[in-house]
Length: 389
Figure (cartoon, rainbow, N blue to C red):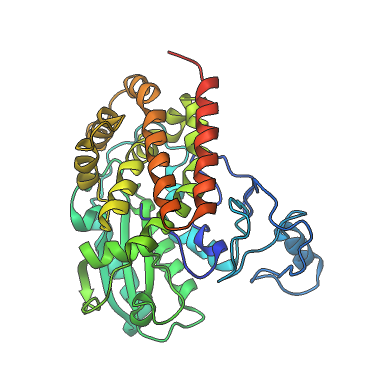
């Protein structure tokens, strides 16, 4: 799984999914607001993808209208009272959801049977389907994630792919790329179902045009580790995201993707089992990966992040982080994993959240820092109510 925040809009930034792996979201399109931003919004913009005045379109519009006291947050608009957990899902966000692999985390059981297909098999199928569908528009295809930098695990890893198209971005491109992802998933193996597709044109990837799906953390991944599968490499001379951009993107991603699940698991550790070994290992490794990227401004691969975290003086939960790395290839029983998670999971996240609060305050991101402080408080409150072993 790659990080999937977009710069197009806050809605698209957090549109990679609207339901957590543990089913904790408040609906298929709009997430719950923890604080009202604007009690009397004067600029209620209609999201893209809603049109017409017939009963079906009116019903869709009503379904997607922000709840009372909330407003849509648009590109370039100040957050105005973070934490705002309203992420109004535009058509762009829905596309992001369909291109990501997070749906493969739900209802899978603690472990899955061994897949008959390999990661390389899936990559070949992506290139074949993309070439057939996109034709001469396809400039390059890259393997990303663990199939590029190493450490791929058929048990828990996603199959991350980057596609670069000819400029300019066309209105039909998003649908075309979604079609590629869905055709690959339809092949039917569990690994094919974990395909996550990132895409753009050479200009949008370089940040000189708007569009596509290459948020900063994933752009960094492609620049540092992308493995060219087909076509011509377009990365020469491109500048990676800076440390501040990576810190802020990582913080926003973590708030939306992780916060509710982390608190829920602290309250009810059995939720780890419901989420499965894939999601459990990701939850346990994310803090180390985020901290590595925040400190080094490099991609937080699992191996590098675990080594970095293990060497931090006084960092709690190092045994859990090292164990979760091993679980990716040697899964323990759910009971054994739970025993370690109950002891070390909350201290690990408190350490990560405290570190990020300091970093965010140091760059003037007081509202994001406040959101992290709120997350830490909810986590500690949830832990105090959790059953003991």
